[in-house]
Length: 307
Ligand SMILES: NCc1[nH]cc(CCC(=O)O)c1CC(=O)O
Image (tube, rainbow, N blue to C red; front, side, top):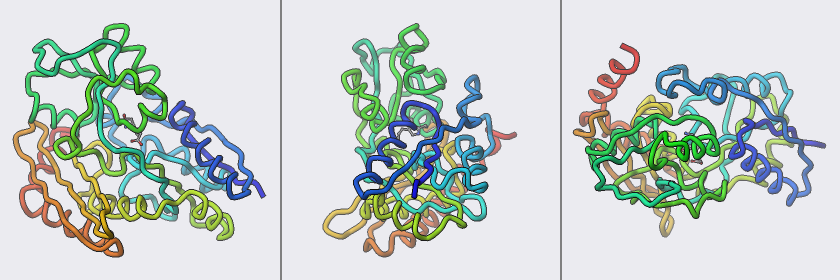
């Protein structure tokens, strides 16, 4: 039996797919990797928020899952919408890498420099920047990590704002010039973890093999809490919602919230629960955030993006 693994073709996506292939191999399961190009890979001249449609990195892959051309898809958990299309499910989450954000550059940088230009197009990062470093300017720099670094070296920006996980996996750690404190710059939901998506019709035997080889239970509990929060907030990756769950001594702590695009209003909270109540704690946090100003921030953002 060979498990067919679908993935985007970027180097980071391929790293993640090969990683899953290794985990499967350790359990004696053979697999084959199939590269799939998505809208998110093709459209590089506009930000993800402006492409607008949900699932820009997943649609084409889901088609192949549905057809059975691939058995499983490997994704960055951060790229996955909180609600998947009918019939799709996430059956495993890989062990999470450190989840914080970093700045990467080919030169030394100073965050107090009034002329600094950072490359990012994430609404969460833009809003945090308005809050903590309002003097810093940004430019959107899209494309895979290697392309972005090339654009930066050609002068598009002074540094790139990225997730540590991808930088580490692509071996650009020696270019890290700043690490953001995850308690102030809370990461995006799912950041640093890999998710395995399947279509419902996949046989139970394959599902069990994949889950057994890839799933890391503490990471899964954290991701369930974060994604349940994101679902309450009705968000995908283009909304400045942030959330991070951690587990210490069997207690799950979920910290998360939403920040207005101008950085002036943040609604956030930390909630604790047992690891078995991960789903519930995400809902509780979501309800709190929505009822305490989050709903207004969301409505304001929707007007900005689609109005
Ligand atoms: N938005 C794209 C994306 N999706 C996942 C990662 C990094 C890897 C991860 O978080 O697992 C990135 C790039 C980035 O934000 O730097």
